[in-house]
Image (tube, rainbow, N blue to C red; front, top):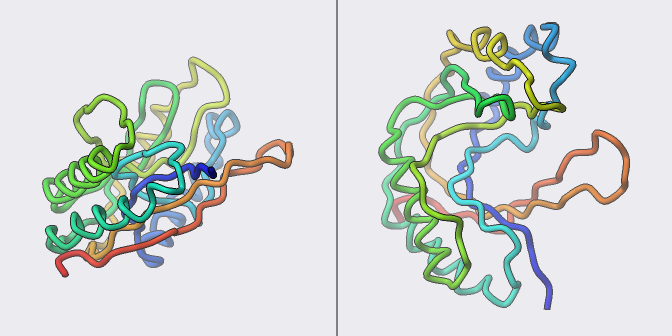
Length: 191
């Protein structure tokens, strides 16, 4: 039996990704940037629910439940907004817009996974974020990066889709190799 490493996500559209990429370009020159492992632009996403390794035989039921969650959620506006950090571990871009709807979609994705029989981490308040970089070492000071991105205001877009994504972890042993993400299925919101 095969296991897939999966998560449910909202994928920002190409124009929003490009705006953020341009806003981040000057941050790569900050002294702190050298101590970060930057995430790959093609993999930028807002995780709604991290499922971890899932038995392939659960996929049909999971897809059915996620489709139902998407149908029950109307499309909503969102934009990339500012930045934040998780202690000294991760630097991220935030979101603005209908955050209550984003949280509701995250709760519905989590519930769909639980009802499918996937053991989920303990429930905690959802923090909308798009991970940009992770620290290479403990004690990294991410505040200059957060401050440099604080004024960033992306253009709003309509979230009208939810995706189930497979995370293929690096296996080549090449330093700096990033996970590869593959959309397994996606569903339109509200239909």
